[in-house]
Amino acid sequence: MANAGGLYSFLQRTVDGVNELYLGWTSGATGALPSSYPSGYNNSTAEIKSVTRTGTGAFTISLGAPWWASMVAFHFHILQASYANTGACSVYVVEDHSTNTTTPEIKILITNAAGTATDPTTNDQVNLTFCTVIKPSY
Image (tube, rainbow, N blue to C red):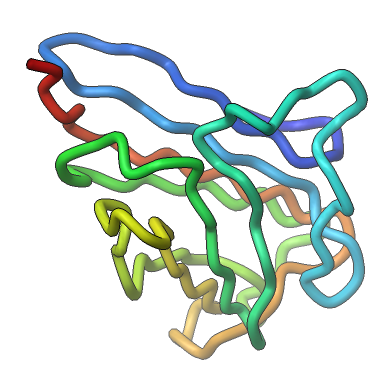
């Protein structure tokens, strides 16, 4: 799913208690993230509170609450503004703290075709989908 700039996230309910949490952004220069969610988007109750670049190709995704029991799958799609195998090609989940009750977060690493950490560049679109099992509500 392409995005038209800005930082976007939404939750799409699927079947049998499995949800897909989507996050997408269009990068600025050297991995720069959009400064905020689009106008009118209320992230005070959002599943994703923020995305922070923590180093070359490294990003921390802070979650609103540890509302899922486990992450069961992860999918990514990067659309480079101009393809190069030295550009952003793959995304890996390097740490999954999504069920942490204090600071729920997921850390990802973006790499080039050779597996070296790299930042997305201007107008690269990064799209992530986290497939999760919801905590039962008793």
